[in-house]
Image (cartoon, rainbow, N blue to C red; front, side):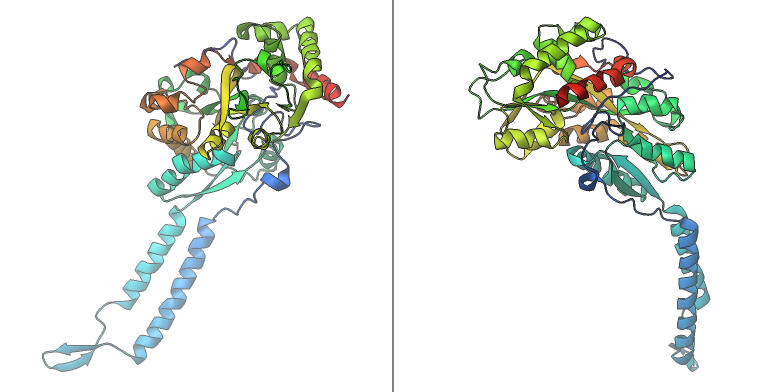
Length: 435
């Protein structure tokens, strides 16, 4: 299926950098702009990669020691073996053969078993990936996946590539980081013959340096038990008289400016056209002025459902997957799809990884329709494989951003616009929020 799009999401090879956001997203890793969540709360240490040669050497040495011990013990306690002429002392097997085979098996295991480091944003998305992709890949191949959570710090990938010491093999990235990293040569160009047929993917998933992995959306969320009337638009989000109380909003320019224009009556299809003008930007900030006294800012994706459940806010912008995860825990949260802004996340392979072949194997595995189906059943993010969409039942499909009914009333994030204007708009937003 093709997602409705006002302009191309990506501009591969373009000058400048798109600064966009993802799950706990937004301008992560850029100076002066908050990352997805505090590092001490999110980051996990990277376990060292298994060195097959070193492991094999150790394994062989261990086997040699065992061989010597066994030879010594057997020399003292040989096994009795009956013959027709009486009892002789003999070995029913060749000890040297056994030891040689043990060493060979150990060496083969050490040489073939590899670890693959896969980096993602963690949270409910990370859990769904583990179920759908990681566990199944490990079972199918015998290779171990080392999972690493990060906050979208592309600077860490850049440092590895420039130092020639790349320990991350597959990385989940946001649209903006994909564009920028591709321009800077941080990510390998994708050989699509090693991934799958491009026709099996939604068009937005096929790019020069990245393989789309899911569709997600930032939406209007609320607690259905606490509002007698359900909000249906960004105009309702701004209506303090009809819906008194605080509003949760991500502390960044991205999405908030689009939401403000839609609240002010701009049709979704015209948002980026209006926002590309000085008058449109001024209009968006003027609309934000109206809501500013009632805003409670959030920075991590886990915060909106927490704010809603605690009653700190009556509505909030939120990542739809986070709301879905809360609903699976029994929380009475709901979303309004009208005017939601949706985008994709991508798999990339950093330049210099020694595990390119295995990285392709993992990405191909994660792109299979049966695995993407399982992923979408575990979190409400849309698969990019069109065959996976066909496998989902109506109930699951209804909660996905890529469902036709939801996509038709949403807005596809315009990566090209944020490439050209993101830095200046974020600077103005930061100054505005501080006043």
